[in-house]
Image: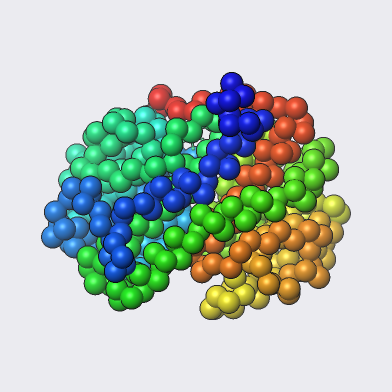
Length: 372
Ligand code: G6P
């Protein structure tokens, strides 16, 4: 078993370390030198795709958070209204779906019953369906009009890691392809995003190689009772995913919030010593988002929180407000989740092992839930 784990202590650790390859392999062969997307595998008539006026992303668990991340990018690049819905909620609310709706399902296994039933329902209503999936020939891709496979390789640990980054990558390729087809953004811009995406694998490696202080922090926090996660924009779904990982494998109460929502309720949770992770957007981004998040850090800190900040390399402004800073390499805002998620995965895996738990097989959970 140790050989299967590639020398790592668990499949989850191995899969966290597989992430540079997962992203690289998912990008591979899907664009040309000139920066054009080539998604011939997407067997839906391009004329039909041009007519799409709404996108609905359907998924469960971690895959749904990949969908939430993708929404920011797809709306930005394609200007197509994009909703993300938990698959099990979808068909019970009489959703508005027609032949100009593109339903994008995201599933690592391709067998999640909740997601499958939602895709079936969407098809019956006449929607076009694309599956983003990590498992060749599984049920959801077979029942969809088209599939864009993630090439993360088999994921064994129950808590999803490399599939998540590969799902974001594939959804981004789909978004760029739609933008290219519809002429929403200049081809030069698509080329730039692709170039930035191609740099992600080595940047993930940098994050992996500098994780020792983070692991030490995780071990020191094994007796915490609750951990909160804050983020904004694409950092918000990253915060949700960070909290989910801790619940899943460390059985620790954890919640993710949109940082702007703090003042509307969650800030009441903060008291002396409460650990709070904050996912900080790039200071190079527009819209004063960075400044807003920095002030959110100050707000929780003023109320006694211990802040653990994930920020972009070179962001010195956050230092004075943070107990711990974890830096990730510079990258454009929309791509940041591909880096900022990684420390949160490592933190959860390390904390869970420090508690003596089986990180690959957490209690009460299954890798793929094939009942509704
Ligand atoms: C289960 C797993 C989660 C996973 C979710 C969706 O609940 O424990 O880790 O995110 O299913 O799985 P899928 O295979 O559809 O991505």
